[in-house]
Amino acid sequence: MTDITAAGVFRMGDRTVKRMGYGAMQLAGPGVFGPPKDHDTAVNVLREAVASGVDHIDTSDFYGPHVVNKLIKEALHPYPNGLTLVTKVGAVRGADASWNPAQKPAELAAGVHDNLRNLGVEALDVVNLRITGALHEPTEASIGERFSALAELRQQGLIRHLGLSNVTAKQVEEASAIAPVVCVQNAYNVAHRADDALIDSLAAKGIAYVPFFPLGGFSPLQSSTLTAVAARLGVTPMQIALAWLLRRSPNILLIPGTSSLAHLRENLAVAQIVLPDDAMAELDAIGAEKVH
Image (cartoon, rainbow, N blue to C red; front, side):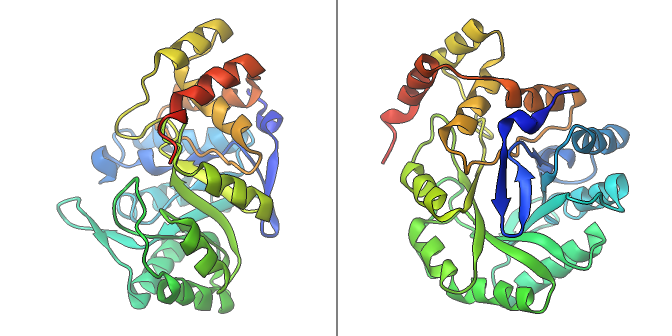
């Protein structure tokens, strides 16, 4: 079994997690909607992730909806000491599988209570406020009222730590003036580099950066450079893309998702890949022209 400790650890609030985590989104059915195609495999993926040392699982009650959190509870409850479950609120699913904003304070509170109930916990380790809008390009708008609503739930003891998702540097600053921010989840990968400056700023402040779509999301990364570096090192291009993220900055935490045991093992093996300097320079060039 792969030792993921080689990737190091990072502190989120009062919790220290291994940088190699797991994203549970893909455990739901097609389009992140409905039950998994293979229930037993979904449960086994979760159990093997934790048995392999993963102590940071990313989820949300709108995955399914409700499906993924119930799978996590079935597979792992009572939760082992040290396991950090990071969830997010800010959207709900329609009966047609649509993704709909749920950004009003009452809707955010309802989302928190849904997560509490379906995960079977009295307090959520980390809750990210997901700002709805364009998937890859956050838009500037005040998030003070929304973040304050979650900060109030944190004061009530229902949430231990707060984070943000799909936000700008200005929004991180606005939220941080209301309550501590322990992590930011934005779209970022070796080819999509708009957040380079934000990552460095967060690192200086001790705030984790958790890229979603680290492998390109619905449009998987394709690059001759990734392929060439992977061939030299004897691994897959997607493993190289994840290894680049681990080396990019010490505050980056990975949550690659999968519903496959074989793919889970492949992802976790990234913790032991050492990228030489020349390979890192080649990979940096992939996204250099897109940085803005």
